[in-house]
Length: 202
Length: 202
DNA sequence: AATTGAATTAAACAAATGATTAATAAAAAA
DNA sequence: TTTTTTATTAATCATTTGTTTAATTCAATT
Image (cartoon, rainbow over all chains, first blue to last red; front, top):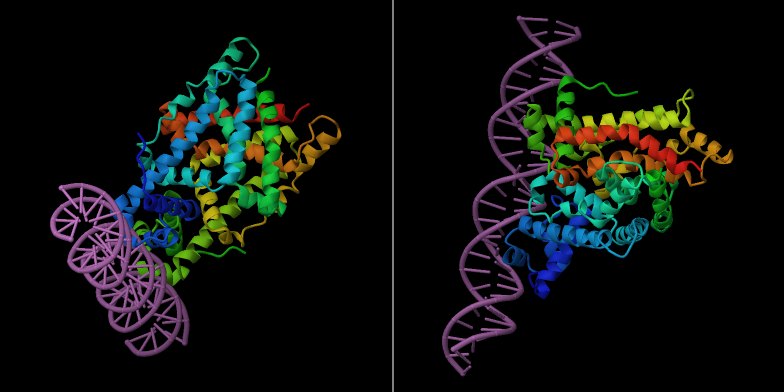
């Protein structure tokens, strides 16, 4: 299904993604992409037609990768709800430490151009995931408070992702360098699951 | 202290802010600003020297307004910790419904250009606020779990702000229009304080 | 009324930008 | 080898962009 990319195409895509993440779509020029990937400027259009087309491809693949990884944990048949929450935190905090610019980039570009989102991989599977089902089972059993599943799912992501998006502010507030900041985020791997459980338990 | 702006300057600033919020700094052109504010293009540079200078002024004022409003609640001597949390949610959710593009815009521009942040109003006062002190008193008394105050403060903001930043995704997931989305956010005025209290209480 | 300084305008400039062209080099097919 | 297709290049094009200039209008002051 997935298109096979040539070496040159991969070089372009890698450089473009790195620049888009750092500076955003509009502030990134095709000449910068060409320079960073060490290819001739014309090759960008030769392979990807336009800057915008290139961006769309990168955006789609990025979102697709992320959603796939998330749904993988959410739909695991073997794990309990609490395990799923824990695994989500661990996986996603690690992912974001590895690529800390990604969440802000994605949400900002979606804000700037919601149509770039039309081709987006289906997000609906999240609400149909095993994680949500397990939560609702817990509500039925009277173990958990009844809250709309959308809030439950949103809260988990909020506690995980938002602190990364605030990193410039947090770093300044607490005079942290990147390493110290990451340590703070890693602490949250253990705390967030506890907090979430407390939030939902009666 | 604050500079008095002429009618024309206000028109420019208002239009510029609206466009910056919608499209970001780079994607906004000076000609668009001139058109939207119905002034001659040259007046932008006449009053504000450059697009970047204009942006810096808008950014500073925006952050300053936000921080002032926040610290106002955080340092209220009359309210309890739980009341402060409740008031924060109410105030900030209302603010964000009124200007939903603001958080993503600010965090994205800070990411793209952390130096635009050097002149930023002091964020340190948050950690020295009455809110944080009250939380720490509660920890000493054994009422609350001991967690770094930075996590406590971050969690509140995460649960309030992040869902707004995800609005394109949430709207798509649940097929919501803006009104329905806002209703969902307003629900959180009551829920978030409850969740936060549960998180910190022993 | 005349003068001065601020506000506004249309026009222009220089640099940057996304995209294309036409020529060449490299690789694959015949 | 020859031919044909694919990949790469340097140069160029047409717009767009931030900014400036020089002229003009407007408002206040003398």
